[in-house]
View 1 (cartoon, rainbow, N blue to C red):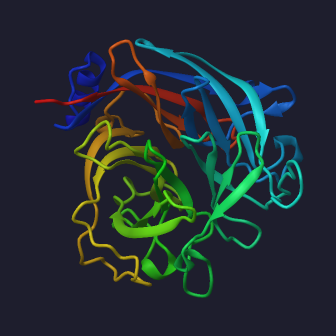
View 2: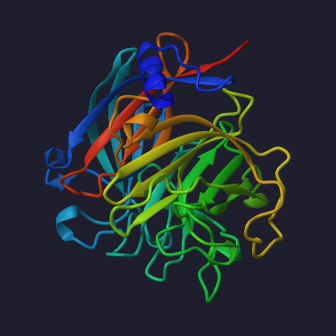
Length: 374
């Protein structure tokens, strides 16, 4: 009953998902997998999204690994034009494509080879650069690198050793840096692993969530400095699978403290259960008061300390009685702020990774972010 009531209220624009903020659903736009091309290149697998207010365009990172030549090379960024307004999204188009550089020592852009990269997230910096994360290279090692807008690699942000895969430690395969967020001044960077490090506990199940680390970096100096790490505990998988596969993890996050002072971040959890579908949750997250576990090499399970606080703001579920908006979810992996709407409030976009699967689609969801003042 709660889901049906909230869905109706969301349509009418009356639902305040939490006292601090309302995420008002304005509309959706989708493009079928087989219908989206840029020249001879198929468009899809959008895993991260960042807005460039100077151009009014969005950088959309593609997480295709380049193993199938028909799907293009690995490590590419689409520059998207998203036509939106108070009544929804009216169109999405590719303006250009940027290929990422794999070798900073060689002049120009040296593209990544098949399987050499799994780019998952992108943020746009105030000095007009792109910070991009990859879940894995050929050795399953994740990285975070800084690129010029033309794709040339400029530098690399060091990853703490506890995240580097080795026997009994590090990120699990394909469960690394899906989420990243940057403060508006460009001085504070956050990133998180999708599911628990090997030494930090099990992955998510229908019975239990997984505990991940939110890592905070100071980028204000000449060299990036790690400041802290906080434990964030996800929800369990929302439904038991009809088949064998299910998961839930952190796939995107967004810095929002300048807009909603009650929260530091919005965190997106994406769950999938075979035979059931997807379940997407957006949480408001508070880091103040959480334990700093930077010096803890292996987290106890379950974590007995103070984890980051989280408040559910939005749920989009394949199970109708649980969903807050009348949209069938897909594989949502992106969250980004957009331009200010005619109301004076910021726009917020969620976007999906279609995995280049024909049953899936490129889905864009538009919300108005309405801070609560009373």
